Image 1 (cartoon, rainbow over the protein chains, first blue to last red):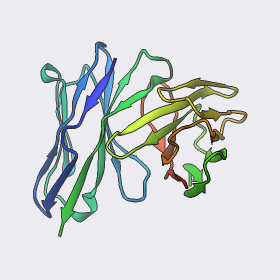
Image 2: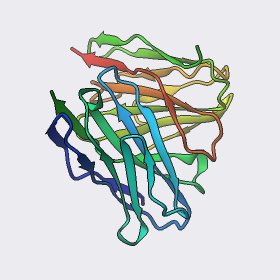
Image 3: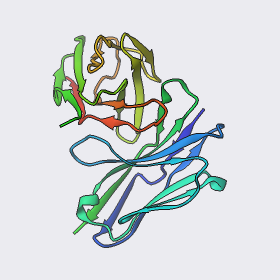
Image 4: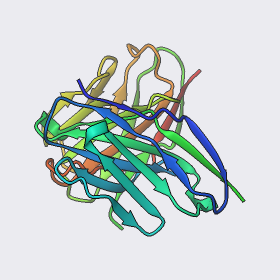
Length: 116
Length: 113
């Protein structure tokens, strides 16, 4: 069975601080996707990134960066120079490409509160 | 604008009543999903549908029912058999099953009084 663990339930930072969200996953599959989604107060989840299990290159997109380490089954997410607009709940998710319907398994989410 | 529309945004229900949550998408996506969100538990899959007139149970389908008569519509009925229906419900769609990328609606919050 697949499992995604986000050990941090809530993180509070002051604006301009960096914040790292941890994500650890479990799967027996060799081929899978990893995702990060952002859920702002409005409620809908917004896709941030998808990473294929064969691609361990780190990725940077503006103030966001992701560190994928297959050896430790982790896919951590860092927000650099945080802003108030980054306040949201962030979910890490895992997809089994061979499963019917391509269902995603989500972690419990990490709430990030950025104070001005 | 293309997207997913869920209604109602807030819904109150008395115990023993069925309630239907609407989900409409104009993204021309084939696959649609219903998730339930509870505090600290992330999202759990209720039902999903890959094509019209076909749907599959997810991890927590008991007490729920769905239909997929049209590509753009995937309503969820929360029946009186659902023992703990108070939750936030999210509808999502995926344009191609092998991408894994979900597009979400803004959710419906159901409270049972």
